[in-house]
Image (tube, rainbow over all chains, first blue to last red; front, top):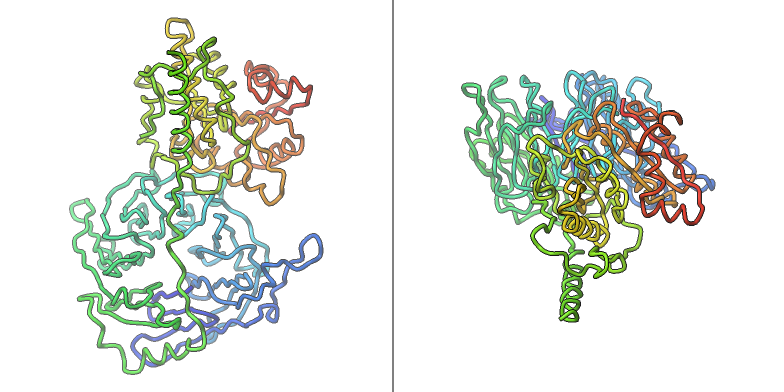
Length: 382
Length: 248
């Protein structure tokens, strides 16, 4: 999976076994992380099962590759998760170069990653819907299971006051869990009719939550009561969400990556006017959709960085957020420099069609047989 | 949206003697994968549930307060309806034929007892996956009692996450239950009983009722008799294990 996000002044791009911390306006690479090909060499302990055999999943021949990357809010720590050998790696980001602090085994491949606002711990969700907390002070401490969904959790956010953990899953649900009393569910935000793929909190409006879904809607919620405030129709199912604050507490840019659509990305400006929220402006960015497999994207103040695969190689393209055209202000040679770093690593996009529920009919046949039985019976009675 | 009831029709295919549906047409294997996608029509939110289609004579301020999770052939659900005429009880069952049997059975009971004292207007059944969709049906703190009677034991360890009582799901049950509400569990598998008790008592929002309290509950004796699974266990002189828990 390709991770890409922007945290002023760094554009972070993670793929394969490599994470680059880039300056978008210069051919300078702030720092990089290269994950070892065999994590046992840097401290991963592969758990033995009851029979004393190493777990098949850990010892598999799959190459180690990065799934999720995340910066701690104080910028002191970097957390990343891997598959191949499933692990959570914690790095100290300063000074200068990332220093590996710990490698802890994950029982399953991660699906999302989020730090606490105070950077003291990190949450990892997995394919089966479990959410674990890993301490970042006691960096070797075993994880704590905080909560569980019945299907994969696609995204999670932790409120800045640390009081609520918000998770969304493939079963159309957004769940608001109290913290630290995570056994106590505060509320659900319900209404989506397909998987919920992305969440974002709005800085300065701490009671509001944005969600996007495979049901082709973007919604705004008062998450503590689960009440829907606004619903925006989208041209296609939504798979990834990015948010940027444009005017403090008043105006936000919401950018949505679509599933299988001719215009790859939708840009929506959410605005507060006279105590009411509305979408003030919307535009679509084509991003040459259809000619390559777009997997992820990031927003800077004026550009959209789109990552994808061309011939199984990681490719990056940059567009202006103002007009959706290819950005010409990117420094010459910058894109080549970035892609060269990933030239050795294969890029095979995830098949997102499996996110949609398979509806198989297990009723019609039974109902048809029942109807016939009843008709037969009525015939016989005549 | 969740219309299942067939009030207007007469009950066809029913036994000529009793007027009730015959179970032999509704047999189905006992296990169902609760994690897989099934073709359920489920409401997106509790506000979207059309309860009146299930309980045509319900009062405006009435809401479902009892839920029999995995109600099977509905034996206990019918008893609940008789014991608590003022309460609405819902049976939730994942298996197609079994839930269809309960739906037909309730329709037949309503038809047959339309002029009696007990009219079975207060019970209904829906086919759904209660492990996934409880919050889609019930508001926070809506339920007063939940029943888990003879749940699928899922003996294999790999399938323990399929068990209806598991750590993650208990928080959901606590969410739909009101404070002071009760969870009734009954099984004839001692291992499962031990599992249930250990998970429920570990959960900070549940406490187990003492034997004294449990025995004083008027529902307790019915739990041993009225479920079909229970009756079978009684016939076979097997043991069963009851545990009742309070939502704190």
